[in-house]
Image (cartoon, rainbow, N blue to C red; front, top):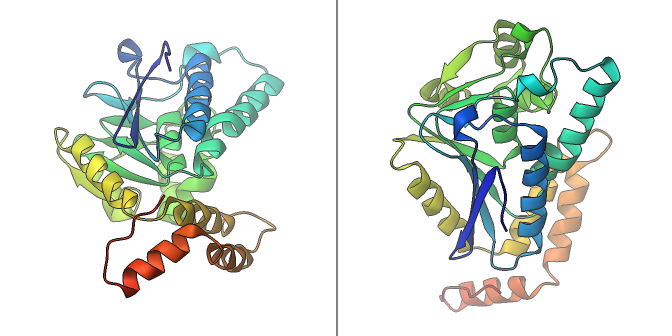
Amino acid sequence: MTFENLQVSIQDRIATVYIYRPKKLNALNRATIQELHEAFKGLLANEEASVIILTGSGEKAFVAGADISEFSEYTVEEGKDLAAKGQETVFDYIANFPKPVIAAVNGFALGGGLELAMSAHFRIASDNARLGLPETSLGVIPGYGGTQRLPQLVGKGRAMEMIMTAGMIDAETAKDYGLVNHVTTLEELIPLAEKLANKILNNSMQAISVAIEAVNDNYKDGINGFETEIKNFGKSFGTEDFKEGTQAFLNKKKPNFK
């Protein structure tokens, strides 16, 4: 896959997606959002890619925000359409992606950048990371799921403070809040992401896929996550991975999942 604003590589079943707009601190524009959708759609169909690491190019920024120059003159309807299409094609798409997605946050993750990181299934950060939702300082609110996912991750009070003050928090504070799982040096960020990805690869990708669905359903209005869990738990008994995993356990062997 070749893109103008992304770099995508696959090695040993791990796909790494770099957002590559170094002159713009990897800010999201419409073209990059479309390319992200195309990249993830391609990775969904690619059997060589089982786990995805999402990160930014360079040392300064994961994604420093949205490209404000593109929407500064938008009307009400254009603004609404911008948020709706972005959420559908990228942010919700990644959040519900059936393959694990790890966000490796290097440097600034602001506005749409933090929203992109929050759409991943979990996040790790380098010690130079700075995270925040500064939209209210521009006279708007987060439009790519920030008002919904941030409270889910850090709690209502902390989310309200971050959104209202438009301030940034450092990596250690983000870890304390539960926004990121691990903090490491910039040099060790991708190696740590790969280490975690390899731990994931030891397990049943089929089981992980339906576990993602069950966890996500707990946060969706009108859907009973417990019912999804029961359904997917039952379905697991009909898979080859279940037979392989249980037999390997009983025979004290390492499972060989397909």
